[in-house]
Length: 394
Image 1: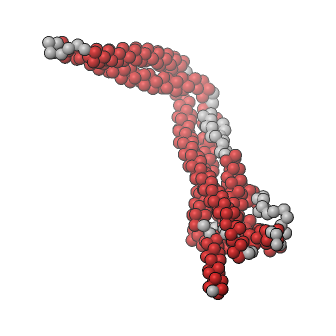
Image 2 (image 1 turned 120 degrees about the vertical axis):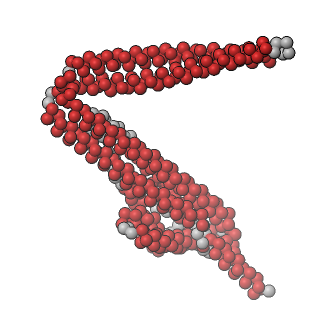
Image 3 (image 1 turned 90 degrees about the horizontal axis):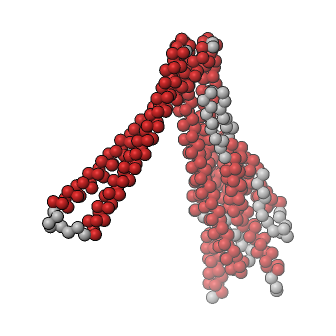
């Protein structure tokens, strides 16, 4: 009977050990997602830096070409500049006038349709006057139709006024263009290559700016996914910690000093990653301002993520132990090993050159990290159990 009871206790202890010795599969999944998000952020930030570099190169090349043409053409550029500026204003006023004309046409069509609806309703009622009775339902329908006519008429009037105002602005801008063209005709013709070149450069810069903005949005989405992974890891760590606290007394009574579960080090790593995520969020990204005078452009530093990652992980705090506990040399070595392994994925990102080698290195890193975390966690809980037994009354 005693042997069967001892065997039962041994099986129970073994099952508890196996249950806690294995890493929670959710942690493994979130770590993979976290690594994938890190890879994506690094890739997108490299693309963003390349796009900004391309923008600066386009800006420098445009400035160089325009300076060359300006030296060749001389003072005619300054004389013709008011004409080309007025021409741009005239084109913009023409576009606004066309938009206002479309709105006025649409308002006019709505007004005509509303009037036809009222006329049709009145005609149908008059034709059926001897059969239909003019009751409250007919009165309400007719009032609604008349109200729509009034609203459409007001909209038509407002659209007509807006169209007239836009047309007047366009006419004034066109008159100014014609006046400047007559006054500086020779300078305008001579300086045309310069302003055509300037228009082409502005188009290239605008297209590159759109590319940069799209990449910035992609980086923001990737960082949001990274932050979500950190949040899920923190939740898993809290769940494991609560479970350990609930089972701690029972495990100590069954086996005395026994091996712990997994999760103590996940919380510490999540805190370090959360600090990294917060620092990256505070860094943010600079807004891109496109100067159409081709004098300057914004720049952005390369590798902000990798620099932030190395600085955060290298300055991460030690794992939190009780002040009264005596940490052995072996425990200190394990703590240092966990910190080193936490920084290893980012070191592999900067060193690897082939995709296959990177996958193998990552698998080895995950296995080594899991084994080290398990060993360190067991030693920590063993010390806690010994301490609780020493403090318990005999």
